[in-house]
Length: 255
Image 1 (cartoon, rainbow, N blue to C red):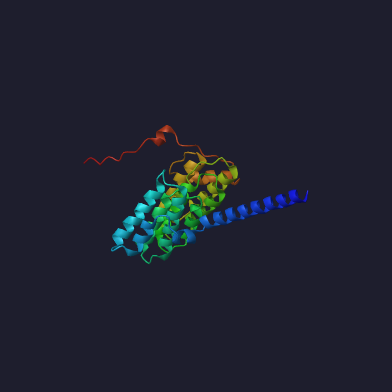
Image 2: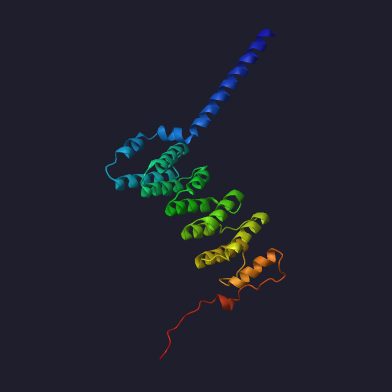
């Protein structure tokens, strides 16, 4: 009986050691800083610091994104590539190089990519922010509340017009969740009042996809529709007729 008890205790101890080792290994393989310094592809880590020109460096970074996007690339290799690109983004003094790193990261199917892209939204360079916003827009599938909030916020507060438009376009996904649909619709409705014309146009286009309504570029109908779903009016505007959908051709005046 005592021998059996000892064997049982030994078995439990071995199991615990295995579980702890596995947990430690899992944590290690998802640690970005660790992966960036421990490359499974020495050619990359050997070449990057010693490249002779920024052009060659940028080209290598582009190549890393292409490699990471390939279907046959193992997940473990993708992790290292993503980590090295993240390190490049955080350490390079050249904004063009940093943007290349972000663009390369956006190509790689990485489980936690959205988390890193959200951090990049704090970047001072609007072109880098646009790359990150585009990546978030591609990840957002019309179901993720958190990413919807990120895009809504960026569409409202970003200091760059094009970054705002990119965020608004990123919201252009159909959703089955009525609460999420309502939230996105109301947010886009608020942007119909924006002082920038192209922001208003982008909002109307995205509203058409989210709500599946067709009011074209008629901002008055859209505003009435928003008032209706907010319960401020009982009026429901009519959608465009087939005649309204016909393209208009501006012919030169005949003299």
